[in-house]
Length: 232
Image (cartoon, rainbow, N blue to C red; front, side):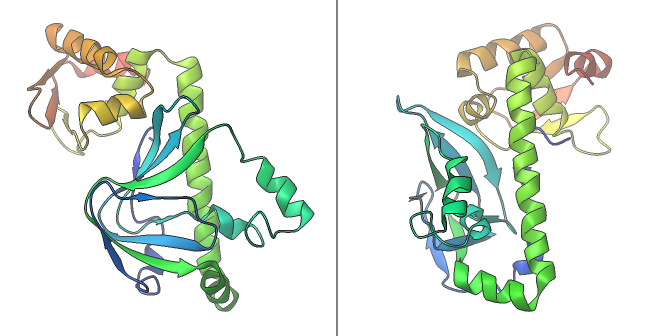
C-alpha cells in the first residue's frame, strides 16, 4: 500500500558511488532549492516540505537510507534559467505558488553528486539512470495517490489507511509502530492535530485500537472494523 509512506532504499544501487562530498547534517537542517546537485541519504531521515504563501508547511513524504532527493533537475538539461526553451516550458509545469525545501528530521549522513557526475555515471551505466526514473515515478505516484485521498476520502479513512499500511507483518493481533510524532502525522495526512486526536481517541473509546499516547505501539483490537473503516 503506497499511501503517505516513508521511502527507503529506492536507489540502493547508487550507494557506493554516492559516497562523495559527505556531510553530516544535524536534525532540523534545511536544504534550500538547488539545481546542480543531488543528495543521497547514507544514514538518517529527510522530509520534503511545501511551504504555502501563507507560511503553512505541508509534509509531502519522508525519505530514509538508500534514497536520493533533489533529483528533479536531473530530468532537465540544466538549471531552468540556462535550459532550452523546451526544458523551460516543461519546468514551468512544476512551478506553483508554494516553495519547497528538504529538512533533516534526524541527524543524517549525506553524500552529494553533481548533475554532471550523475550524467557521466548514467552514460556509462544506463541501468543507474533507469533506477532514477523508477524511483522518480514512484514519488510521482505517491503524490498522485495522496492527492486523490485528500479529495475523495474522509479524514477518518485517511488515518485508518495510513495505520493499515504500517501494520507489522505477522503480528497477531495486528500491531502498528508509530515512526513519527502525532503532529508530523497530522501534517502528512493534511489535517489539524486535534482532528487526528479525535479520530484516534474515538477508535480507542470504541475498542477498535489500543494505545498509550506516549508510546509508539498501536494495537488493532477489532481488525474487521478497522479495515472496513480504512476502506480495505
